[in-house]
Image 1 (tube, rainbow, N blue to C red):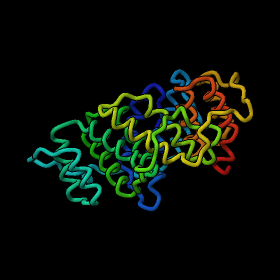
Image 2: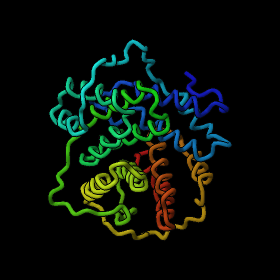
Image 3: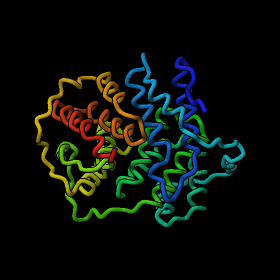
Length: 299
């Protein structure tokens, strides 16, 4: 199946592909690998050079097998609505009350475009142990790219996010001190997932949200929980030079030297996030992590 067959209409085709990804089933035993993660990451990397879109990334996207979802599977809209709040939605999620979640979502979407709801679900995912965050953040970025005019897309995105929050566990925060992302030791990362989450954290820390204060507090608490075992000192153990990775073109050239897989794409997208918000020290860490991708993903 060719998801992308016309570079001229690349943006529209990416919107269609991301919309289709949002409709893919959520596998309870493998939800962390929902296709929205890899497709959104690929979109971000392709966006680094739209004048010459990466053929390897487009070929990878075209190799993905996604289920076509018929229109009659869309959820019916309710005709009546009542005033509900995001806190009622949070309570329904915490109690795994599927019927109530669906009713609240239908009512909320009769009153708004759903953007603030999805942002609130990102906020909730930062209270959890990192699995839900990795998928929900991809969903949030996808909807910001697609836009909030398509009710089916926003309904699918929020529905998936609510399910993810029911599948992940909440971390303890009462004994944790808050830290910022700049305090983390980039060279202490030991797993691919830690790198993925680091990229997400950099993006969240550099976006303005409606509930900015709550997001910042939850992100700080999450970072302290998630990276509690890391040395929180930004030292450079190998004095890596950054002069061969100065811009996005260099990053894409590095990507082309790898056999593409979902893990490689997610790793490079995380490095892209680090570079975008970086100082020179983070650029050196980007080179360091590129050199260690095969070790991190077990390739």
